[in-house]
Image (cartoon, rainbow, N blue to C red; front, side):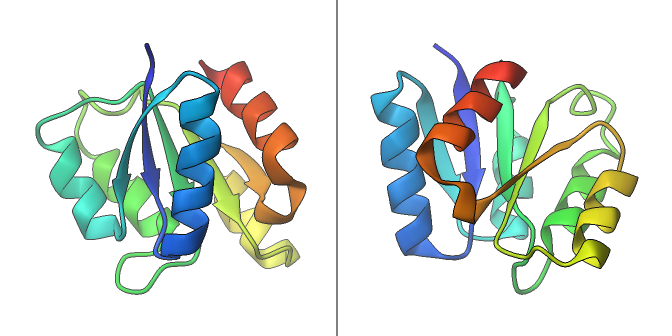
Length: 119
């Protein structure tokens, strides 16, 4: 079973998304901040990181850049999830490298399709 680290400061969205992923057969661990995600990554290597773009403290892109400093974590696929549709936000995410983006507005079907393509 694939382990997904779900990182989102919106606990309602996190619970909903975790439920979708668990029902689809994935094991899910959660973190409510970039710092909590980095702490988790110190002892566990998930199959995929589902990372919120806009978070207080460390943003999604800042969290991504931080864990990419560890060579043992560079190969973890990352799927950014964002409610922001602005071109600047999308450009910033895509400039990070081999990551995918799915909008929170896209819903369950598109999210599960994107996760399935990465795992």
